[in-house]
Length: 381
Image 1 (spheres, rainbow, N blue to C red):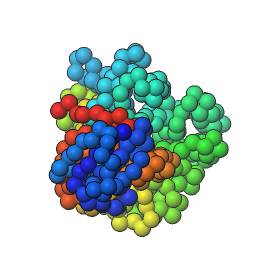
Image 2: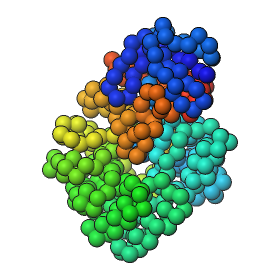
Image 3: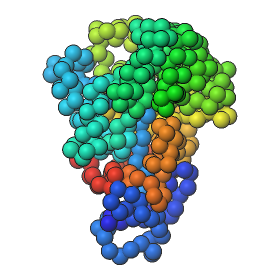
Image 4: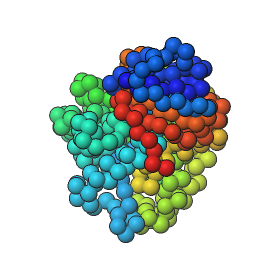
């Protein structure tokens, strides 16, 4: 039995319990109790001045992306090399407090996910699409067939590229019929759909097709945000870290694929626009805005920078931010009854930080302890 105490417990649903502790038995939260009522036995860890929260959730990462031996973004490494980098990146994010990540997504994620689930290697809970659909997949019939193939291969969700990259202008790339086929088939298979859609046309088509979540949406307008809310979609805007990381590592990406000078210019010029749309999204009644970073090579383990920017630049209330990266993120993954909340019966995925992140969002980066499925991990730095 593991007993954790701190000045407060933030439950992930907006509640704060002062001077409480959490009792963990095996891989579950057994109780959340006032300090005076905690059992005297078990392995006890006290964190004066600290806060216990649900393990953080990042709903959009690219687990195996990495820089090669030459320091540049590497896309041609063999699967075994990619798998080792995926494990390394997973450990970095786990030590930063992220006990669950959704990787969108490559086939190599599957064996890494399974190894973590077996306890062979440490890492966050991995939700993966194992691949993606795009305009090259084909027409509606081919779209449906690819969804079936990924589902049969063990995908946890379906990733769909419905627009160009923001580096290419973000225009739509899939028809309504293609999205209807992809999301309709996924719904039939019981799988969520995560749609890369930067502009109003692609996002609206995805909403009309019954898809689950819009990723990015860096060029959306208020009318489209209203449609997303009305249709009940989640919105994962990736407001800060993705662009900051690209710009900081420009020399490691430039000249590879569509990482061009023009593409970097477009990303940089749209940075303020992303934050503006994020603010609009927060003010849109009924729109569920979740936490995702689109972490790529160079960003794994720095995921909390997105959280800080959402508060300090985007104006989100810290308490609401915490909900977005815990219980609401869990709901978007279809795991709202399993993770994202500090309460009896939930998975023992926890993080302890110094300070009070409901008052100072930067406290989320002061990780003292991470508990994943009941097993404690101490960050190396």
